[in-house]
Length: 421
Image 1 (cartoon, rainbow, N blue to C red):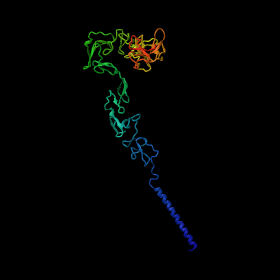
Image 2 (image 1 turned 180 degrees about the vertical axis):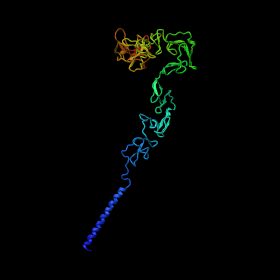
Image 3 (image 1 turned 30 degrees about the vertical axis):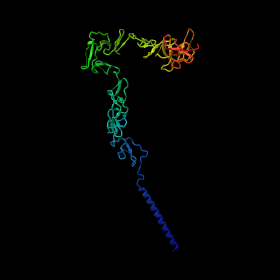
Image 4 (image 1 turned 135 degrees about the vertical axis):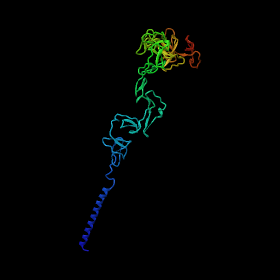
């Protein structure tokens, strides 16, 4: 074969290879462009949908109610239960719903599960899992006052969204002052919540006056036999229950001879509050309020079992009786002492003087010690003791000491003295 023929064959072969390579490149481009899923799927990464709508991976758009639902426009709102787009509504503006509930845009009502759901009644709670209204067990045995309902979450009685406090009642879903709080009516009368007055038979009935009693069956006032011939001072009226003139009438306060009736408060005012007041346990009546106080006006009031103690140098105080030889004061900072002059035992703040220390008053000695004053000199702190107790019994004196019964008015109480003198 000639050299020319070889060169021609080589050139032809190269051209064929170039053509084949170009065909492959063209085919690759076609296959790449035709490959499924490339460039058509947008995804939901970074997409935020409005309430009730969900993003679909196929197109990256928000669909109402789910991936296959409708796509709401800018002037529409999604109803997730119905899966449809509705025109926007202002009915749900400022509406706050409870747990499991959502505002229905069609009527502005809180529905269990949202639009189209049930409206829970008084005492019911929305069970979000089933979208139904149920009554919790904690409210089944709760009885609320008129106008109130049991709150399913707490089991407490609510008036609208709040709990009414002491002295309040529920009216039209709001707590208002209860004018009948503390008012006790009798004799067939009932308290009228509008004015707090006792009226015959029913609220709004008549207010029975002097010499009258209530007939609850007819809600009318009739003459009372007990008040026949009874004449009352201005502002007072005869109470048919006992025939006594009372401030305000039935159930009121009986004023003293030097008092007058204040009809605005149905109370007796003026006069001496200590008239007919009998005080005991060393207390005297306070002329400002008629209370029995230790030391009189402004003093403390003693409780049951206490008496008023008067000691020189300190203000009168209240104390229960105690046992000096066996200290039993309730307050641990106090000690039990005995006063020879008063012939009384009492609890007082514990002193600091130890045994044989000098003292001038009972409170100068520590707990269990008596300030023994003999003659005109200073006193000495000595241990209290029980003359009937032998060592080592409680209340007895230590070794080398004996119990001296020095208190003539208290033979069961003494002080410990040194047996050697």
